[in-house]
Amino acid sequence: TGKVSDEFEDDIDDELSKYLEQWIEIELIDENPRKYWYEHRLIYPTLSKLARSIFSIPETTANVEREFSGSGLMINVRRTRLNPEQVNNALFLRSVNKN
Picture 1 (cartoon, rainbow, N blue to C red):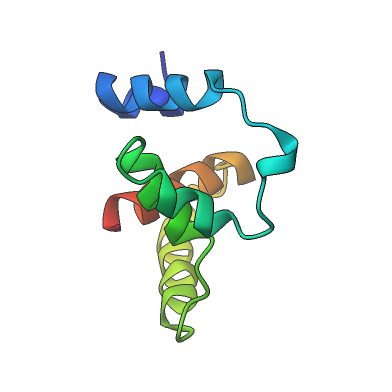
Picture 2 (picture 1 turned 30 degrees about the vertical axis):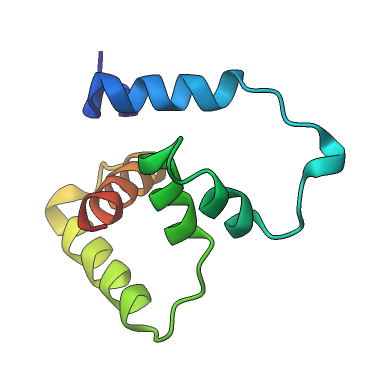
């Protein structure tokens, strides 16, 4: 169907559905989201890995430079019709596959 979720396997989709259906009490929410994802790493292994990667502060700017390089390779004179959402989705999937 062309949706981003179609790119992943069923067990990952099940993991996402399980996470979205859970009830979290507001009083139990910590200011640090990495703590939650670390504590739930065995329940949501893929989501936990992705979230911890997103919420981590990079030690260097190398990752940022790689992303800019990747977007430069993707957006060129021949690909001027790509809209920003397509580029963002492609770069996100590229970064997830690397992790």
